Length: 350
View: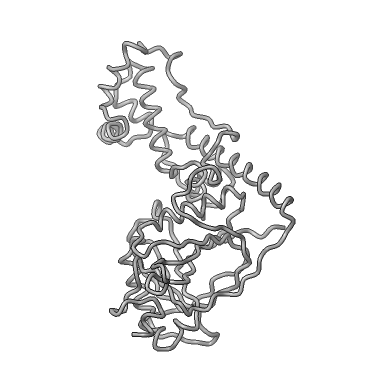
């Protein structure tokens, strides 16, 4: 019982809410602050943040110019000189919409403009020209977005627009890098957090990998199996617990998303099957610290806040997976909070 409590597990062997583990006595990793003159850092961050915005603008422009095509995330990222590894989160942090939601909205807005500006084109042609696979899919999406059918929308605008092209909104949305994207410093945060850049050590870990939708069930299965092996060997007390999330659920089918439940182990330790061993890379990381209620469902918001902080600071992501580093579970923390860091790998400054 004492072991289960210190490790943040319930008496049935499962980790707490969302499967995120904790542990009052987990040894925290040694960390070294990246030092530098604050003024110079601020100038560099401001410049890099503007470069981020320019590149995000290029991505937005590329999407806008190709609304009739089904673009892959990799193609869009390449057009804007981003790595595809973290591009989806960077785009969401800067724009406030996912790539898919942004593309869908632009297609619908272009279609709405075409309905008014091109009164002789039938709805099926407009749907195809704007990248929809069928008029049925278009009609459903249009009604969900505008609350009215495409035909009813066109009829409601005829008296005002009369199909005049010069009065229709531009069919090609282009974006200026000076526009105010989502700004984490001026936008009220939904979740309190502290963000810093740290030099993180390598973590040699034993892990259990599960495939499935990111959420409570998948995480509890992974961390439950890990705890069943690690607790009797004392690794929950001596080690550091981490969760590695490899995939983007907006791109990867939910049942194929990978999550690794990890605990650090001494070199030379050979875990029993089905556990395996891996090394999580060290180096510079954006480390965003959160303390959430034990019954929270705000993990997705925490990740969005972390990437918003990163984009605003102008930090460049590296092509490595992010991870969560756990400090306490609700059972171990006096205020009943789950305390953890979201760690995002950064490219080392040259």
